[in-house]
Length: 427
Image 1: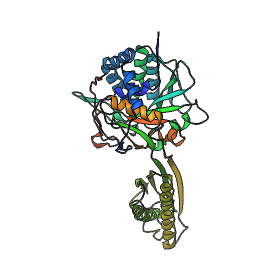
Image 2: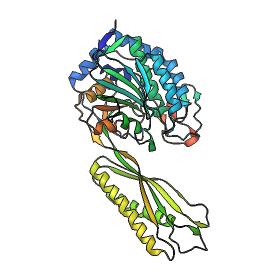
Image 3: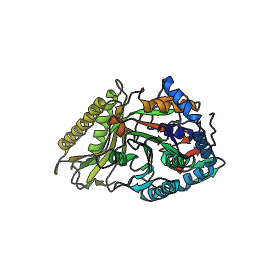
Image 4: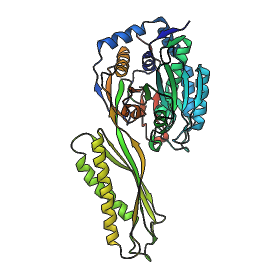
């Protein structure tokens, strides 16, 4: 007979999966020490004493080698944004084998597994994202040295996927029934130009209702992010007739205009971001031209802007557009012949911001689970799948997966590092 427990147990079991060694992911701020209310501490401590829950803990420890092997298997399937299908197929097979009531892939590529609860009036989601930041041609073979595994994307967020499956298996092995339905998810499009497309679909009117959300991400074990960091991203392209650098000299040059636009924007944005709510800007990629001795037909840049508050995002967005317009007009006035330059703005990313109160039960229970395993719980802001439910006022947290990781978005040496250790509970 299955033991019925509150669905907040999912958070306790998830935190248990993560070792005590901490790191900080680039998309998560350090956070502040949180105040855990006594009622939630008592609730989590009482849950942890339950014999079937302790059995689930023991099962996770016993599955350490299997989890490690599956981490390697998934890591070695390339999954850049928009190319997550092969990894999704393997992840779906793991969820089916783990005992989900049903497993399916939605029209944008999210892999979902439903485990029905006793009441089925509400749905709790546990998410890890399928995609990694690395391009398809990256060598993703895992190299092991002692208890350390090296590979691009192993921590962000392949380990999150393994945790999702491990929680499902532990529930099944311990014969635990939750009050609510639980969706175990491998989402697409979390990274870069994926623009959270997977989770945006999950919270649209085309998908099953989700009442609360837990994401697993690279980052410190002690984190429970209850705030979303908003961002706007653009690809801006200057276009002109192009020509030979000598024979067509005097034509307006898109590359020159692009350089001026970056200069004007950097100066204005630097001044703006020195005061007020924390706001950032970055020109991450530039390109254009065909040879050193030709005037380009087009030149482009990709820009990322982030802010804690929507108002600042609107203001820095306007600074970008006015800087580009200034550069366009200036270089059109400088031309000696030929047609004027034009410029195209393409929005390539939009992540909403938002905040949920520290006192929200889901946030409190997440922090109480973290504290139960000896960590100091911190809340903070991140740019993750959690942005979408948070912006809609739906209870959501992003939990850091812990471990020792490095170079999460770096190709230095073509590797990032992740330490896999056994972690035994104190309950």
